[in-house]
Figure 1 (cartoon, helix red, strand yellow):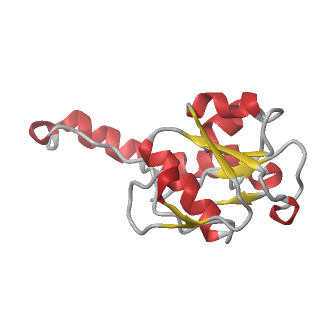
Figure 2 (spheres, one colour; figure 1 turned 45 degrees about the horizontal axis):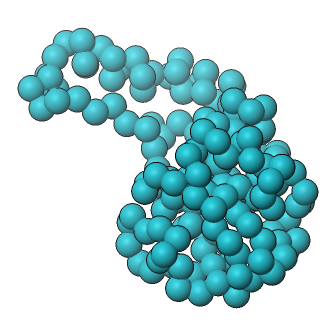
Figure 3 (cartoon, helix red, strand yellow; figure 1 turned 60 degrees about the horizontal axis):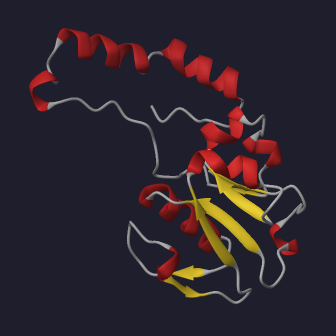
Length: 154
């Protein structure tokens, strides 16, 4: 997840009253706010699922615009910046490692996981899928294909 802008090249260019769009779903919205907080743009309450109402300090009077995550790339011309999930950034030909003003750190706790119903956890099909998803070949594919934009967590 990263912060993108059509008009700004660094967070130092974010002016008083700037509008930043973030995903409106609880998980990604919280991630976006924490990304902004980690860069010192705002301060937020402690907690996992925080929203715009949980901003405790906002020295630049940033206006947070909550939108559906899939809309964020299309509003870059209408806002000063937007925090966009990597999958949507890649779909819009944005390269997170080159185009993002700021990006989540490599030690981000957010990762895709394989989740199954309890009764299916010992299924041979699930075991085969898990083995394939965490194989050396898949790891090498991710590293080659995404060049650091997506990082294997296994």
